[in-house]
Image (tube, rainbow, N blue to C red; front, side, top):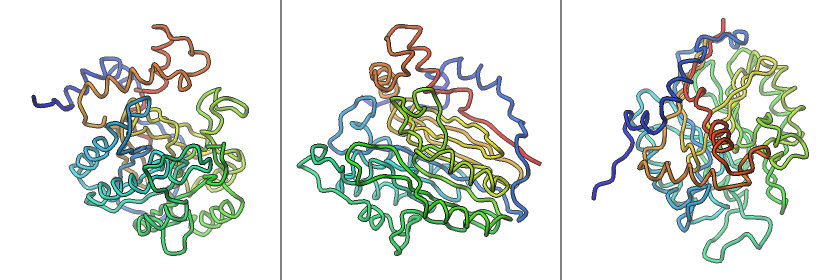
Length: 359
């Protein structure tokens, strides 16, 4: 029997009228920060995928690793159908836990993109420091191996885990890395002083251009559970205040910052002239990717759903609701009201598409 995959009409049926109503309530013309760059460039469209967590031996839980290969293959095909995309960002956690065999499948799929793609590592992209978390049927990549494996996709022969590239005159890309590959317990991150000083110099030296910054770990804390000492504090880097201070100092040069890691629908917040975006996971509900359009005057976005079957999307949603750790502390108890609150937080439908402008 032929499977039915999501069309735009089916997407609206699955997302429900709540998506339409909440999206219509947005203020799409908000002006919230000053003109960032002096060098003019034509609008640039790019896609972002994050938290693929591909596993060829995977099972479906909150992370839908059992269908992770299909999710990536279909997303690559859909991105290739988008018009005028300049590049794709892959915002970390490509793998379940640093497996070489999974990395080979990921790269084979990403290499089918019709535009350049850039990779930055996440906390699941290298060999687990704790040997108990390694599976016998896999070979593993160290962090250094991961950087070499994706050499030419942001990384270069220097072996550095962070980089800067010119996309077009007036627009630059900066990839950052806060991972802690030698820590056996911690899945959070720290942007080390050397990298922070490098970032400061990059933004100072290119103050007349727009610098698009991205990293796997979050720069801000999106819920009470992510506050220091909370059960989800490691979604955010430890030195977030210090890093945001550097970015705020250069807000004219870096108005947009993107990260993954949190496994929610797209969200953003504006702090001291910088807009911090988190992007959804390909692998967990609501299973979306992003397409951005950025210019000297504005940024806009949409977040299409991964084009797998409705049954997979519904299973992913139920798996999220069943995963107690992923629920906010105040909504731990499973009941209809709490389930709605959990879905509201993770889907964040009012931000599924939007537009910000500046003068």
